[in-house]
Amino acid sequence: MAVPILKQGNTLIASIQAALSDRDLLDLKDQLGERIGQVRAREVIIDLTALDVLDSFATRTIRGIAYTAKLRGAETVVVGIQPEVAFAMVQLGLSLDGIATALDLEEGLAYLRARGGNRAIRL
Amino acid sequence: MADLADQSPIQLLMREMGLNEANVARRQQIVDLKSDDLTRISTIKDLLVGHVDEHGDRFFDYLSTSEEGRTLTGNRSLLERARALKRAHLLAMVEGDYGVGYAAQRLELAVLYGKVGLDLPVFLAAFHHLLSGIGASILQQSAATPREGFEAFMSLEKVAFFDLGIIVDAMVFERQRVIHRQQDAIRELSTPVLQIRDRLLLLPIIGVIDTHRARLITESLLKAIRAARAKVVVMDITGVATIDSKVANHLIQTVTAARLMGAGVIVTGLSSDVAQSLVALGIDLTKLNTVGDLQGGMEEAELLLGYHVVQAASPPVPSPAATGA
Amino acid sequence: MPSDSEVPIEHEHDVVVARQKGRQLAAALGFSTTDQTLLATAISELARNIIRYAGHGRVQLRCLETSGRRGVLIVASDEGPGIPNLDLAMRDGYSTGNSLGVGLPGARRLVDEFEITSTPGVGTTVTLRKWLP
Image 1 (cartoon, chains in turn brown, red, purple):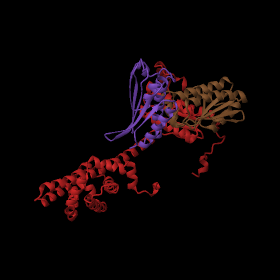
Image 2 (cartoon, chains in turn orange, blue, green):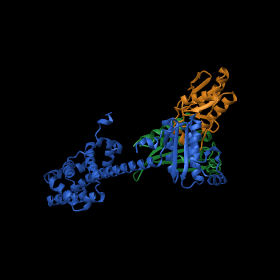
Image 3 (cartoon, rainbow over the protein chains, first blue to last red):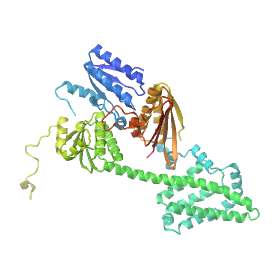
Image 4 (cartoon, rainbow over the protein chains, first blue to last red):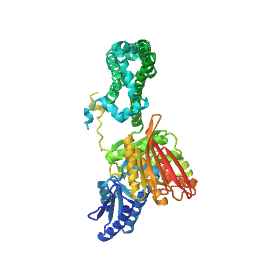
């Protein structure tokens, strides 16, 4: 099951569906890397709204995707982590340190717009 | 599937308790109710039906002999209703149909008992009193055939215990519900998340933070972040009793979780003494964005969100001369 | 009560099946969405471990009811190589800031009761229990 990658201006948006297999996530990493190069995207949004579980493997892979994007010159924002999922992640001891996060797609786009300007919220 | 609004309270209670056909069958199994029992019960049916009011009275008379029992017998309207229900109960006990409808009938009385807060041991004693009265009359009736009489009573006892199982479960269930409601209220009071401005939440943490409370606080905060679409949280820990490494880890977890949802947390109220001892314990505080006091934290938060708080040149406070004193 | 089930863990897709079944079971019993997620996440970790280290195994899901308390029992087992140094594997890397070496100690934090037996060359069994508050 391939992950749909949409292009919005300079931004690529990957919406991860629930029940994604390990294979699919790894494929996404490769696909995204390619697309970024193809369309010379500067920004990537990974939308996790539909995920009901984020275990250590998925978290590692998403980090990998973010770093791959960075290597290709694109900034990544991870959005859509739900309260229950965020809670489970920290209980497990997981985090996405070093990767920008936002509440949802809307906020993610706003964040990228603001970064494009002078100010950036750094916390 | 019936709309929830259409269901009577009893039906709702049955669903919540899991009292469905399968469960009722299981309960019959537990008391070992068999068709032989039904046959035996039918032999004493007329006896019971003929004296149903007498037996019902025994139950309520016993209750009125104790203070706890009088919480029911002292309440006129509820007592009337209870008597009517009890009468129907006793008649149904010998009817031979102990299915979902029968169980629902037991629940009505149970809910009533729960409403007056009828003391459980006293209820059980009254129930026993009632049952032994029935037993005595059965044995009297079957003086010629004592064995059959005894067996019939034993069969009826199975039904009595079947009833008790349902009634006690229901009373306990309702009690638990009250406790949960109270716990929820306490929880709400102890983990307030306040929306100060658009996108800005204030989380004042006061008191002792154990694992359980830390979890409640984190859960409340995360839900509030989603609801308020917060981008910044000011978490004030001035009022936290002791901040040891465990508590510090809880707080770091909360901050990390908020970050995962795109909200940054400014921690205020962490004294430099406490900070130093935490660092000495090996806690990595670099993950935390700390500001000395609450006011400083609020100002930082407002700046981050692009708010620019300006004091009005002429504050709108009426001068003494204008108040017509 | 919802019925018990067993999910064979043969392919990585089974990880998702197992955790979804776990979530359904928890939901049917009345666990909060947060607790459902904690349970599903724990199952996901254990099931992935099975795939990664043993190749295949199974996850059993059962309802628990003892003295008025209800809960869920999860048994993840395999006949894989086992864990040679169990103590080390169970040591919590949390305080050292090791955020990605989570596995078992992490999963333990998500549930109420956690038991693990592992014999090198024979296999591993992890038993989890989570109770309704």
